[in-house]
Image 1 (cartoon, helix red, strand yellow):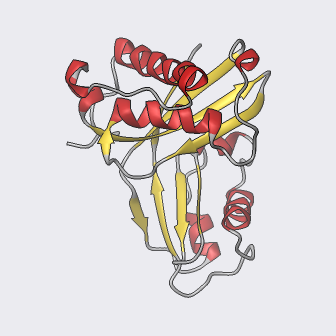
Image 2 (image 1 turned 60 degrees about the vertical axis):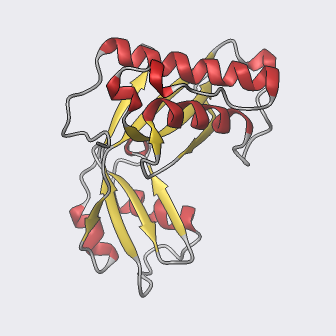
Length: 194
């Protein structure tokens, strides 16, 4: 069964295991150039279940990488390890992480709940349906696709601004609802060192 936010939240030990796997995958990447392989047999059931995750890296409060997947296609721990490596070395907005950057690197994991279709048919419709601080949103018109995680609400607390940024990220004209556009929302379970 895929990890769902309607399920029980992860136990503290499982959350720590995911953070450790993310950091270990980055360290493995620095040594080998590849993500750390994950053996699902050794994992507790919650981390072995299919899950989708985004991993966000920050240094000194600044974004240093963020990648993820929207659909649960592999064990949650494997998704986290792959996305941690990808955020460190494959985010096209940044140079690959250097060994000296490992110290002081903050790792944040967002475990995605299921995608829920939104029946919006216009931007005002969508703006009215959004739940600030809760919803992550995915848009797709067949040619353009983008998502914003719920953490983005911290910097864009107004639904109209959130929607504008989502359109911009997708390469669409803000405010223009293209024919065939589809929208989904999702919630996340957030994990970070505190």
